[in-house]
Image (cartoon, rainbow, N blue to C red; front, side, top):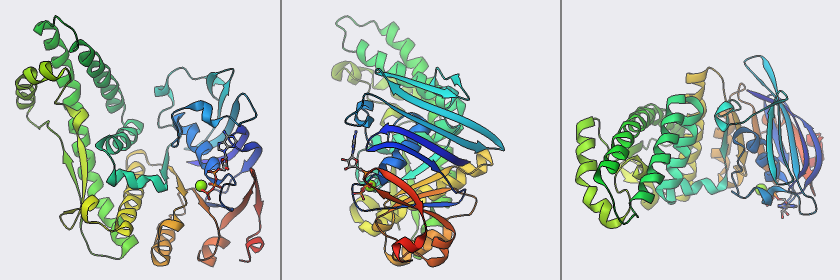
Length: 366
Ligand SMILES: Nc1ncnc2c1ncn2[C@@H]1O[C@H](COP(=O)(O)OP(=O)(O)OP(=O)(O)O)[C@@H](O)[C@H]1O
Ligand SMILES: [Mg+2]
């Protein structure tokens, strides 16, 4: 998958930009607060119609304007697509090849992007919800059954939790919820379990290559669901009284977690900062490969400030892993330390005060 161009109007501090990209590595260089991350945010937004920084779309509108427009063209499996996202008069609109997109499902995964941001450390340190969100997004992009089951499950969960707050609860109604949630929950459990078992060796492979350490990474899938359907049913029945007392649903895949272990020790408790960053990076590289294996097409890779997060050796190892078939967008405050070969084989853009312009690496003394 290749982004060819992006036109930006009134998005954050980027008032008007028209960018043409290289099909390999694109490096955005600039001081702090110039607009580098904003460019990645625009690229990312077009794939999921959501930002990785905020849930409030109004934050994305330039302070002095009322709306924004992003227009991109990208190539996937030899087809060229035009995608336009606009937010004007408080209304979102998404057009694919000039045709209005009504539901997210129509485009989910079409423009597939994997991103690394400094905040990703929360994937290890933060709440289980962060980890579930990542897994849910990645699986929903490549598996329709997962997308549908997840949507149905969370709809039922919301309704069930509302119902549990009622004064007169009929057990027959809860039975209906439970039967449906068991069905979709079990599908989600199975897909998650299989996914983690495929991902784990890939994460190990990339962790070894980035860190040059022989420590073993494990991803432990923690769920109160089980392979046996009847046992899951029993679990839900046995928790009914607790659910009634606490007025919430206490068991099910909405409580799942994914724990990272390094040599059998929990990374969030024992891993160094560098080890944590390297595991996240290995996870993102593993996702790229996994998605390639399933879809026969590499996603686009966005790396925000990744170099500041890694020592020189690990930076070098990362660049060696950036496969020429993966279009990559990297932000950095300077080019120092980046291998000359990498710079020679990249497009370099200078980002200054909301302006982005392709330049020669000489500009930065490289
Ligand atoms: N809605 C908005 N309208 C105008 N400017 C905005 C808006 N939202 C954010 N900004 C500004 O955009 C500027 C650039 O932000 P961005 O996060 O892209 O910087 P950056 O180049 O990635 O910097 P750093 O190296 O510090 O990460 C910031 O000064 C920020 O205040
Ligand atoms: Mg930034």
